[in-house]
Amino acid sequence: MSLVRLNIKGISYSQTQNGAYALILNELDGDRKLPIVIGAFEAQSIAIALEKEIRPPRPLTHDLFKNFADRFDIVVKQVIIHKLVDGVFYSSLICERDKIEEIIDARTSDAIALALRFQAPIFTYKNILDKAGIYLKVDPTKEEDPDNILIEDIINEELELEPVQDNYASKTLEELHNLLDEAVTNEDYEKAAKIRDEISKR
Image (cartoon, rainbow, N blue to C red; front, side, top):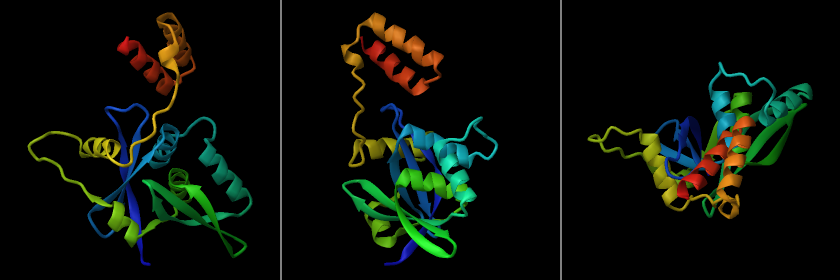
């Protein structure tokens, strides 16, 4: 099976579902996009790697992996998205140490976050792109961000994320306001947004 090289086009955030992001990959020699739904932490890690000017004060998990690999002369040579089952993409890290190559299973979001840090190319198989690749159709009469249109389509269809059970519905309004204050104090803005949404429902 032939490999197709992918570039990262960007990350989209869902306007309707909190905490849902889509990583948009673009085939290098074509117009198809490969959208992959990812979590908030992975989206943040990928975004930080894309923005060279942003430097977190302490290493994130993927930065720690990179530092660890550098210390022990391990290089991630490439990432291959090799399987798609029930809307879930499976990936492998192709690593090398002392001229010995190893293949390591990884979540696609983690694999791409590491590929960025190692400046490693990202590939998928042609049959996966044929199955899951899409052409981005934008209505020229509407002034909308095409990536946001795309993420809504993804989330509303087969790649919908399972809702996270936060049990905020069982809390009283007073408890919710206390949790909101605590989340803001801890700079956990994703949690704060979920609590705020629950308060708004009341």
